[in-house]
Length: 402
Image (tube, rainbow, N blue to C red; front, side, top):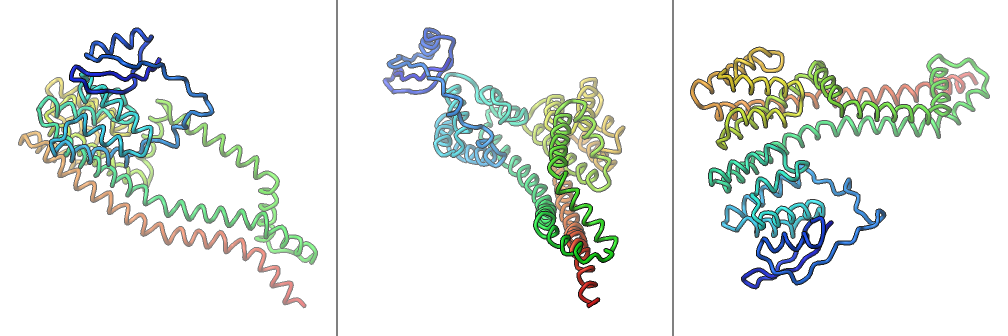
């Protein structure tokens, strides 16, 4: 049960908020433990299902988290208290779902909960990496520096993800254009042209006959075909969400001719930067590896990283585990890791590797896009041009026969 409350502190300050408890008496008991004198306590009425907000439309994006982290870093670095910083940011956040979470976190901190523990209660927003970094800042007394470092890290991750998404925009637009053009021609243009050609009773070219058969098939069975396609997509998506599905797709994606090498660059960059950031924060190496494995985003890399964690616990170096998997960790990466471990500069070495692989990722993405653009234009021209030619050829033959 949730209760809205208004209370006074020992200093006479008014405080308002929402508290969850099994009963009204339990809510009163919790508030009194915080030294609050309750003036108003009302149970929050359940909102009808039709009035509830659809959380899908208020999903907390990576950009929201990046902006929040950067602004929190600036305010906290300016000697503004953490609670005041959180409440100020909450008042400026447009996403109501995110705003409610930040207000709840600030209330928990005011009640005596540590910042990292309050963040850990919202795992869908704040990853284990985020929580671990904040915890390290609390322990070391350098929370301001950690927040600034964390904001920079999230911004790099966001720009990399945005770049990858940007590469996919152009192919998506081209394929969408092809589908729209084909749909319009199949359902509005070709039926009339087909009737004209049939009335001429002349022998049609093979390409025209194939186009007519395809158009008739799609008009009759197109809806069923689309429904089957949707069911297949949903089934594949559900399978991908399962453990075996993730292992299957993650393993085979890395083997694809063009996509595989590109994904390896992304995962190597992510592994190097996350591990470097966590090591710099002062966390134990085994914990750094465990957190990195959780957020790497690929089950193949996760399994290797967790295996490295187990071997580090037994006194083995990280590079010895990575060296056994040259298909996903190239020799250059492994050798640089070895140098970093021997010289005691693993965090700096990994950050240099992260910078290198991020540049390689951007270069590969640019090259891929430069090759893909003309190929897609040719594809669009062949599909649309071939379909138009299939009907222009017999029309031309009909006009020249007269």
